[in-house]
Figure 1: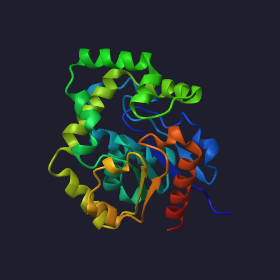
Figure 2: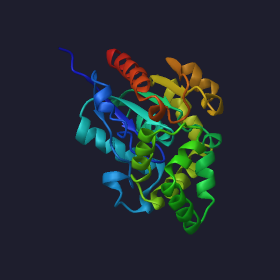
Figure 3: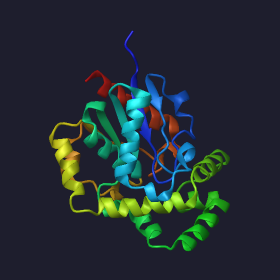
Figure 4: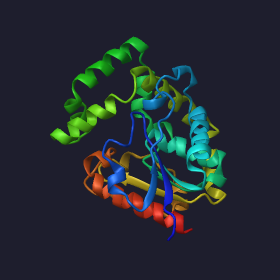
Length: 252
């Protein structure tokens, strides 16, 4: 019997990606859901250690210590940027990348730019207001609220302290805005790193996706009737799409 391909899912600005029970929805992959520095089980790490480069190194260590074989990387939003940097740093560990509306340019970092422009006190106050009104946070993202979605939003918002979110936002702005960032990603794909692209139907037009990334991808899938948080709106369909992509990478 063929061994299940490892799928390592990297969360975005607010984690984790386990809130919708993906292990129960994807049975043909060996699923890993690591926390980035500053989040969940790693939230005690100081915010000064949060850069995209350090997050990528953190995931490479996780691959070495917890996975131990080539895997498929999925990165959502900010996690998409981390996933691409992990693939650049350790290509021998990566069978392919599933980039779910990941950050390619500063145009993708509109919320990060706003948060990075606030002082710590200003962001702490705004964060407290968001946490106190998860339904409003969802509605602001164009997501219809249900009791289950509000419960999930509470889990997402509680997974990291506000200082982590602000530090990560600053890192995204600094590092994706660096003139060398996009050429590095383009070089990675030119060397043959396999890539799938996944977007939500309502948010796909806002993804500042370079033409060379689209051309290099094995596929560009748009999940219907969802936006940027497609796994929260339609988790079964999201998992079906992701699992299909991961299995394809596993077959070579």
